[in-house]
Image (tube, rainbow, N blue to C red; front, side, top):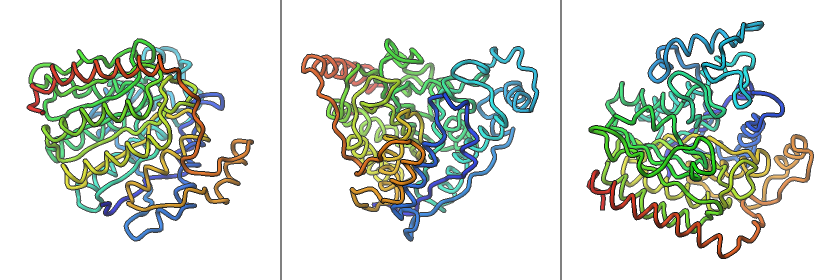
Length: 389
């Protein structure tokens, strides 16, 4: 199924580093890229690694206010005056100021732009910006570990330069609020977000009633999920909603935020997905891209705070899907050695093997009922607006 694909990666991604104790650990990106390389995925004839570029101020300005971009640049300098930075969402516990913050953030945005450029030029069918998916950043402030919203910038670029009709699918445990807000009034962009309910998790948004405004009514789709939602519940809801919505909307390209912080072992969230569950999600995204957009699929990373044990394996499984290759379940010894160097503990042995804890039947039933209610409400209220069936 897969055709040409690229991993967009640079060692400079390690510069997006809020602090040693921050949950967004840049080592997760390095370990992901090294596992992909250890498996030989980017050595395949149809797959390669490409270096990102820096997004320009004009490109950042497609989504972010110029005043905000200038403030990020100013705060990135040594000895910068940090007074007033809170107004821009910076200098907080979530978003500490760090050296070269603008350059690091603009590189991640530039990587998603580069992927979009190469897909629309016909040079790639798929691309994966492993550092991307910074979906919380707002037009005038940082939010939720996100300084520049690379996915919203890439979508805005696709709209401006190609008039592309875009579907954005977000499976991060946190609601993709920044992307939704950027296109809440644009009928040519559909945002679909599956996430833990805002009643229990940041950013406290993403309810079914948030469905777009004006001519864009029905193009913002949100399924809030209850704690303990596992693979079967998630996938049943995905199958009931995503394919019919995407087929009805008929986009020219699919953009995905592939956060894996809905994993049962993630320290910041309360969902119960597994690595095998994520494999099945990636397979569904891939099939849908080929069915609807001729394969045009811009994938990005996102959340994932079990940085060593989960993120590299979940996103390597994504890259195998993008490249259309099969790899051994046993992890390469070279990578396991690197893992132990960074994590200081024994490395896992397999790509998807794990032992999730049992969830009480009553809690599973509550999660299933919550998802079913959300699906029914979306089918009743959103489907008629976009002629989905």
